[in-house]
Image (cartoon, rainbow, N blue to C red; front, side, top):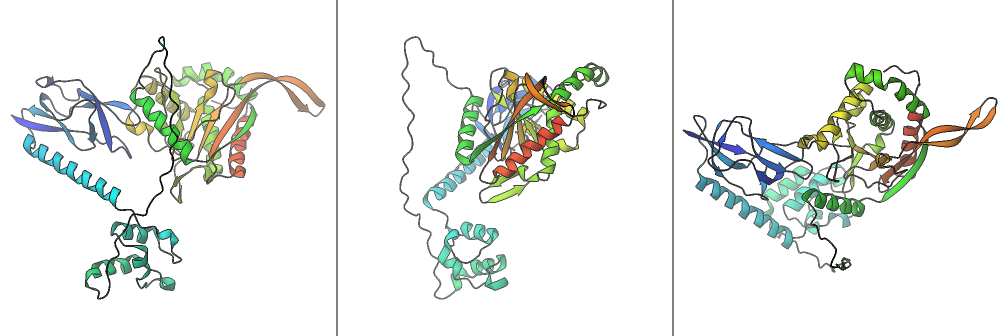
Length: 432
């Protein structure tokens, strides 16, 4: 008999840990290959961890609600053959060592404040600043280094040579990094809530707590500004009514309005790449790919945002298939962690619930989110060569929230206007 280490698998870009929510097997249970052993939850989705081998579960190393890092062993399965797992004693020692290192890092973070190089009149590259911070070099010490770069700038090699010979230079004493005195900022206290005898108190579930945390952080991070525009989608409504049955018969997919709107958004992002960016501190990251997040309501009332990767490369059929697939798997709780990663811009359909328009909160670290309002029949002025007249048109509002730190009104307004232009120019005779 041999033992196999069941490890927490890699679950997508930027997912480093997960919480154990439920063990589906207990010690002594037989397990088939690819059979689910436990359920886990990341900050985005819930999923199952299957076994890579057949055997018997002999040891569980984490309890429910424990946080596990990607790559950590979470259980031991005894098999007929295969690699021998590390002993429980060795595993315990390793976990203790990791815990001690983590504690040491946290203590260091609390006791030492990073040097602030922004006060210097000299130019230092971000790489040089990062190395200086990691090595505990103060601003005065960094400014004293003779640079060999253009205009005497300190480059990476200059700094590394200085660090190498730091202790051997006569008269040079490393300046200790002293944490500046910080005046406490008053924190707004939540208003106490009175509870009456007939009131029911229900604790938020894990996902609702995460949503609450992300929404507050987004509002505190981004300077939210909104632009609104009304769109005439009469041609789209007529075209969809005409082709939806043939589309479903041919493609085996329902044709909703969502893929049509997503196609227009993807085109507009290609026209205005300044909306397809992220913010990282003082830096702007221009995203190469256009990955559209589509906010989806779950049966329990929570919200999740699966992502359509490379949306600008999909035709309408491909977009419809992607929208339906992600939407169906979101409702069934079958999304994978990677399905919610890498979004560069988000679209949310508030019209599904009858809202005319909304002011959505930006999905960090993105800089924009578009809300689709309900499509309504309204009286409108129709211009013709023979004159203007009043007619019934199908119209909707687009609500664009964007981060005013990096997106000005000209860009934010022009982008949503371009989306509207694409929708209003829809060819009613277009082939499916």
